[in-house]
Image (cartoon, rainbow, N blue to C red; front, top):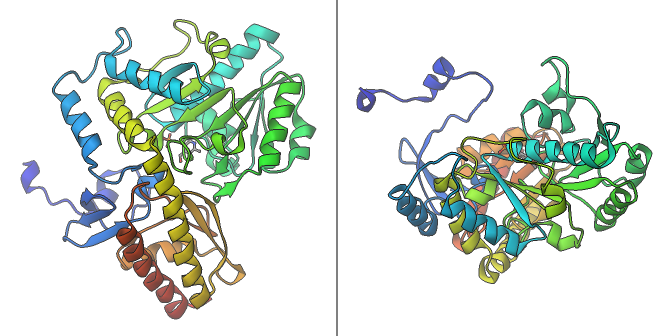
Amino acid sequence: MTAQMQVTRALFDEVMVPNYAPAQLIPVKGQGSRVWDQSGRDYIDFAGGIAVSSLGHCHPALVGALKHQAEQLWHLSNVLTNEPALRLAKKLVDATFAEKVYFCNSGAEANEAAFKLARRWALDNYGAQKQDIISFSKSFHGRTFFTVTVGGQASYSDGFGPKPGAILHAEFNNLDSVKALITEHTCAVVLEPIQGEGGIIPGDDEFLRGVRQLCDQHNALLIMDEVQTGVGRTGKLFAYMHSGVTPDILTSAKSLGGGFPVGAMLTTETVAKHLKVGTHGSTYGGNPLACAVAEAAIDTINSPEVLQGVLRNEQLFRECLTAINDKYQVFAEVRGKGMLLGAVLNERYKGRSRDFFLASADQGLLALVAGVDVIRFAPSLVITEQEIREGMQRFEAAVKQVTELQPA
Ligand code: PLP
């Protein structure tokens, strides 16, 4: 029956909950940074499944790890531990500030664990009054009710009844706004080193250092949400390594599994010990299949070859975007780091990122938006020079289409 079923985009509107509005094309195959839709048309992938497909589609190391593990053991639950999870945790600990790891299945779950841990750490050490979490406007930490409330957009968290309390929002890159909110009641400050969904806004080193200092002064934990920036995306294994500002808790997902769902919360021994047996958990977290794939991803990505390649790719992206902008004058700036870049639309084209996104798809390019003013690129870390150049030709055609057919 399945073989005869006609699968079309119209079926989405018929059978799916309408919380998404996917593009019209349905990709059916991917290889490297190229995907093909049902009609066989090819697209260059500058989106990477929203900063997820860190090694492109069907990378042999990930396919090999998945196939191997699929023939060994799929699932155990957390009543038992497993070898891939332990190997992955050891590699994450060896490569970062962390001493302990908790596995889950998504970025939101990693942040949910981080926020619960921060609250429990504060309760155990300082008492019930210390529960404020300071986050930032335009931040994004996931869609569970706790994480979406910590996130900086009320429009995502309104309309679902009473919200979790003791959550405050400061202004990103504005240390005074943090000073105005932080007190002895603050248990944690959470930030993205580069705000992703909020528009690819890098945190200034001075701001990050200042937040670290304020956390230390007020006995609060610094949580870095590296769900979007982590696992090589900015040219280092984690973005915190650029600034030298070390968090107490770090969350990872997206690129960690290269397309296989997995999330992780990393922390120190002194903080971790407050999540005692039974305080938190997940049936699938640390699943052998997910951890085997993530281990292969970390092994491949955490190498000078791949990490330096990310910075070379950034250079080429910036050169191509500058050349396109010289011709069409659409961007005010290109910001971000490594393979997480945002082309910010200038005054003339403000508010029209979706037009560029749709025109890109018309021209055979998968791009992303980050809000209405920014076109986001988050491709594979190992995208080839040829794929970048071909994708940029298509992007230029999209820019031409928007500026000529739908001028500002
Ligand atoms: N945190 C950040 C910084 C993100 O960019 C995202 C997703 O875009 C999340 C958390 C949520 O991750 P997930 O969608 O895997 O729950």
